[in-house]
Image (cartoon, rainbow, N blue to C red; front, side):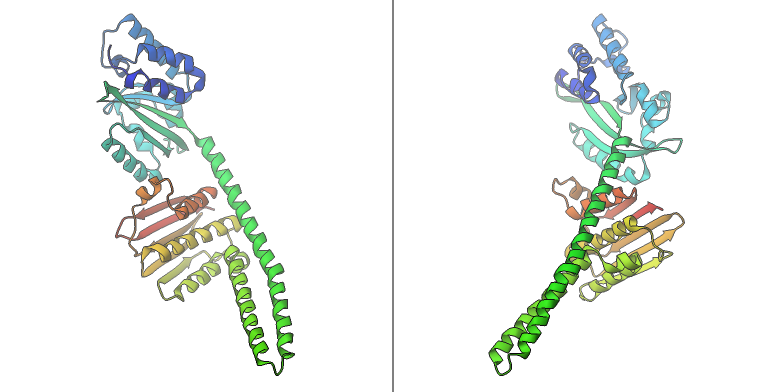
Length: 386
């Protein structure tokens, strides 16, 4: 029977994921089975084998997704789309079966290496990752990279089929969507904060004024005056709470004076609790950077500090805001207990705070580097090109 992809069905599923339009061709290939010769491992072929290989190669060279067949680190087949996506020749990959991995973007390399280790340990688990590559011409592209293990009678063969799709346009659309969502969210926060300030604030102040008049007319009735005083205290608390909520929704200093004064005020507020010491510093960052960048950088810093206070059991945190040429950078670290970042991300309901940070970074076209381990605190760098 020869070598076949998992029970003759996995190869069909893999190719259907490439393009629904080639479904009928995939069935013809699957029915004959993908033989060893596709990996360059056998010289003699039956007529059916040759026809199957012919159909496979024709199909693979006429789709937009890159297809690579490997045995260990050796490449037996690579299609034309690989050259289009990676910007390197097929012969280079055939000489060095892992050369395409050298073009992984530095910001994604550590994450992918981690995923590779996990999937190599669990040999029957597919690799399914999205990451960026930096082509030889300097162009950055997003790819969706899947590795399907090849089995023979459910045994590991050391062979695999790799499918990579160019998802740059999709990522661009996603980032634009994230940006619009966050802009809408910020706009609604501003509207709600203004309603609190302009609507509820004056109303509560008016109530307080009427209570003061009632108190002055309650002379000689100590019990009534005591009740009115209690009501005044509750109204004053409500006014303070409304101001605090409005400030959290849209910090006045952020809107009027920029990130540095707003972050100084936020850090000062945390320091007053006495639970943690936050050290804030800045360099060349006093100018205004536009509401989109300022709002997102402020929210990211606030999220990091809030997470530290809630979860890290840290005694110190450091926040640095730096303008370096055309880049704006936010460095954050604490001396808390840290956590397993990759394990947290793999959980279906992973931290909402982490998800918010990632979404905000993506919405402004920035990059981030998140480093943490149990017992080693947290170190985060966020950067954006101005």
